[in-house]
Image (cartoon, rainbow, N blue to C red; front, side):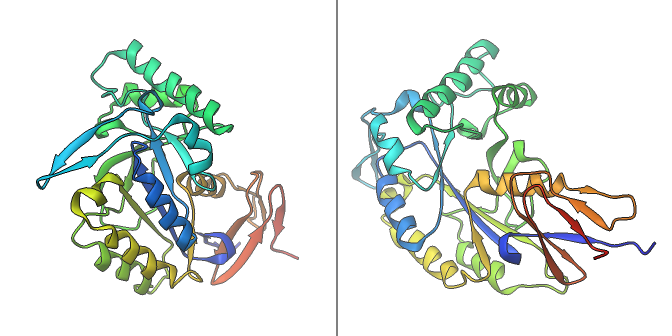
Length: 284
């Protein structure tokens, strides 16, 4: 039997995917969501539900910036078509407050967000980026399936561990557009499947008065929509996990997709589609 290698590709056979993640549920999310909607791009928004409605200001570069949180009743409508994820009830450092308090922060935040959104919240971003093995286990027990850290890679790798998911870049990275061009143009000899993950806080655009950064980035990448799958964090997580859970017959001629997602795979430069619950029979 000749060995055969299959390669995961994204929906419709695309070899690139892009996802965004923005933290804290601040009022600047209103403008960011409108920009994402303008370009037809999905985002994930990480919210500490216990802080919703809080009023805050910060002085930056000699000017006062409103960094208040959105109101609880806005969550369901503002983020419609996007993903709401957890960020700890009061944005506390989960690795430093003791296990009972950390469990409460995780569970109660999830409960409130699910009440506000009407769906199961399955993603998370570590407050301050601080976590340890205990925190990871707490998140898993609470039903979280991925968690984003603050360290970035400057690469387009598929994550090996979704509980320590590293982004490609923060939007303030000086190499942002250089990375975007590399992402789009560098196909490579083997046409590697690539994922661009961008993160930040929307209030930072007011701090720096540079909303043109996200506008310019989105304008550029969406010109290549035919090559890119634009998805939320949980959509990326679900898709990759579904691919990793494909089942194979002993001779490799049958591939079962037991997930609820349609999966696309590349076998020797031929793309195959395997529907949810379907078996691909390569001998037919």
